Structure formats: structure tokens, C-alpha cells
Length: 431
Ligand SMILES: *Cc1c(COP(=O)(O)O)cnc(C)c1O
Image (cartoon, rainbow, N blue to C red; front, side):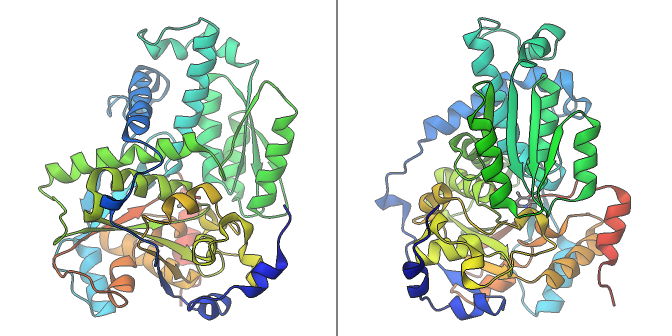
């Protein structure tokens, strides 16, 4: 990609100096608009179509994954109130929230234990369905438990799925891809943890390692896949299907909150805090929530101070034409799921009228939050997944916010982290 250095040299916005100094900051999106004035480019019908496809695959999920039997084949996580964590944060931050603080437990989604179980699994089942329909192997009204059978696996073994990842997307694509019988190539950036590579290799995934960062891993994967007509490349930087898989969360979250008696309104909006890497996961979820709640939902993204790619792309309007390295940042963070230097252009543009803002968090704070969440609630989350946990306090200090507002922190990963790794993370830099 050709970078216009002049454009990058010319950029200016109020938070730029904070970003360069890796000083935690809050950027408010000046382009956010009321939903009443907008026609959104991805329709509710498209999201409903994705939701219906996930429903068709319920019998397959139940047959192939033991942890999906008790959930009736639905890949969804709970929303809980984290009152003990809230009490600790209220003391530490000296800020009282009127409502109970809510936590979305995507870290404990079935199959792959992170938010990537939404988009990644969706894109792979869509590809599988499309191939099976074309080959006349199945009809849309048939029982999709058939996807968990020897003839189907033999059929898919002629095909390949490839993806570039910092870890969790590779896990989700690798697990679902192998369960269907595909060959799977995962192009892993240098940030990816060893245990994730080991786990994928154990289940027969071809893991290709890079010493460089995520953007390079994606580019190499894309390049390799392009030369193989039997290969489908899951393009984390540009995929509409990934985005749709994430967006299905909108309606489901509303049903869960309805059941809890929580009905956001303009006077009592729902603030949602989503950890952001390349943007697809948080973008899709925020988009889905906007579709169901309109102006009553206020999404914020959270990024590490070393990797604020979405903030930089949106604040400059350059989107994927700028990377954090262009302003001298390293993209080195312990929040491996968020270690992305260049944002998705697709997501940045979609989010321009919808996102309230983005804030940044330093790594030490993520580890402090990790311990606080575990000590108070007994819930283990990986560092990336804690980026949203500071949101209510971080944003409240910087914006007018109705006291009665609801706050939902989206926890995005950690469910698959092995015990030994959990201990290392818990004890990280502890003094
Ligand atoms: C991938 C990931 C995210 C962010 O999703 P993107 O689509 O990369 O923005 C957040 N948290 C965790 C734990 C992740 O693995």
C-alpha cells in the first residue's frame, strides 16, 4: 500500500500529542449523529439472515461440540451485574454509578472462549453452507447435523480456510474449520501466544509464524490464499461476513436486557465499552446494538496506548491509510488481542456516524483490572478483555453523561487461557 506521507505529516487533532506520548486519553467523535438522520449501509435484513444461518447450524453445533448441548446450539454469553467489582472501582476511582454495572461475558462464549466465536465461526459456517449447497450435498431445510458426518468432512477436506491473526481469531477459525473437515492455515503475528499455536497444531491446523506484526500476517495470508482457488481467506481487515456475525449480538443482547428489566432510553442511555483491535468485533457488535436501540445506545471503543489504531484512523479520517507506527508508536502491548497497528477501513467508515468515541488504556492498568476482576468476582479475563472495564469512569470524567445511564462492559476473551498462563497474567508486574 502506498502511504501518502504528506497527509500523515499534516495530521492534527487535539489528542494527537497524548497518543504520541502514550498518555491515556479520550477522543470524542465529532462526526457521531442521531440515527434518525441516517440510512445505514448494512440492513437489519442482512443481520437477520446471518442470525437465521446460525440457527440452521444449531444441530451441527450440538452434535460437534459438547459444550453446545446445554446451550441448545446457540453461541451466546450471559450478561451479569458485577457488584463487587463495581464497589472496588467506585472506591478506587471515587465515582459512583447509579445503576448496577453490567458485564457481557463473551470471554466465556462456547467453542473458542472469545468474541471471535461470533464473527469467525459465522464466516466459516457460511462458507461451508455455500459450498455444500452448490454441490447439492444439502438443502436449506435439511437437518444440518449432517455437517458433522464423515461424507461432509471428506467433501470439505478438498478445501482450505486461511486467516491472519494475533491469536484468538485463529483459534476460532481453526477450531470450527477443523470440526467441519477443512484444511486450515493460520498466519500468526509475533504477538500470538505460544499456547494458542500449540493448541491449534494439536488439532491439525497449519500454523505459520511471523516475526512481524498483525498487518503483515494478514497480508501474507491474503497473498497466499489468492493463488489457490480452493482457499477461502477470512479477511479480518475487510470482511462483511465477519462483521455480520458480530452484529447478530445486537438483538440477542436486547432480549437479555429486556429479561433483566433494562430498557435504555434517551434519558437513560446504555453506554457500552468494547475493546478494539482491528475493529470488526467491537464494530459489528456496536452496529448490531445501534440497529436495535438507536440513539439510546452509546458505544465507546477501548484501545491500548501502544496500539490506538481505530482512534487514529477515525480522528484523521485516514482509516486504513494510517498506522500507529506512522506516529512513532510501537504497537507492542501485553493486550495481544488488541495489538493491531492499522485499523479496518471498512469498520472505521461504518463507525464514523455511530461511535461516541475511543479511549486508550495502558498495560499496567489492564493487569490491575485483571486482578481486581478476579479477586472481586472470581472471573478470569485476559488483558485485552479488561480494556472496557474502566470505561464508565474514564468516559464520565470527560463528557456529559446522564446519572441514570446504564453501563455495559464487554469482556472479550480469556475463557480458553490455560491455568498456568492465567497465573502468569495474574502475577504480572505485581508489586
Ligand atoms: C480480537 C479481540 C478483540 C477485538 O476485536 P477486533 O475485531 O480485532 O477489533 C478484543 N478482545 C479480544 C480478547 C480479542 O481477541
